[in-house]
Length: 308
Ligand SMILES: *Cc1c(COP(=O)(O)O)cnc(C)c1O
Image (tube, rainbow, N blue to C red; front, side, top):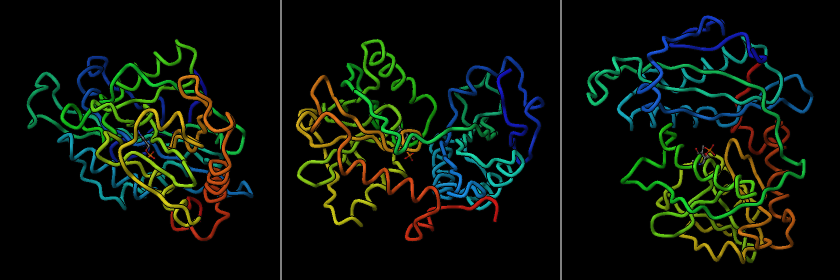
């Protein structure tokens, strides 16, 4: 088996990786109804400490997601924050790490259309995940032929596992066609987001991003980037965005916990700006990395320190 951490967290307790099993027949409807979070922890500049980025906000969203799919969890945000710290400490993690909590139904899935049979169960795992910020990482994108789910089809604003089939098909298509990632349009034909990250564009020194009614996930990183852009004195506009605006943008980038900030240098074979990572994208990624590493006291309230 591949390298794995010693412990997982499951239903209120730390459990050994090997002991965290379920019965094979649970592998079906329980996962369809699941919701999750994607959270990152970053080592401090000196390599000794570890900071989790906006942990209470992520746990609040996990609670919102689970409530939305009628699988509410009883843990408070404070408890969930505490459980996360316990798990990171148990695994003695001091490197950049991804944290994945999943809330799934532990109830009788033979009654899958009966909401009264739903019983929330939860686990959390960690795995090493190096940052790509300030490494020169860029991607080429295509507009997908798949349409992004809309609010009357599935709940796009939460991290509902079933939603991700839509984005997965889009990314498969993009990769098979020689691109790095997909960008998705709403049923109205407006720009929504990438399969797992929000989309931002810079035009004439203004940051423009699809609004929360464009079928996007209510992203915590998006909120952070908007805050940073405003603090840098930029205008920020949240509105519907047309596909052809992307082709003419000065800069395009993705933002999200997994994507961090990912510069998009080409869309549908149109070079964006100079065809290289733009200046504002670079400024924002540099700033964000400094915040993650605990080097920027202005945004220290976005960090939860694990070891002190
Ligand atoms: C998680 C996610 C994002 C980014 O949200 P963050 O809170 O910034 O991590 C954007 N879109 C989708 C579909 C996501 O799942």
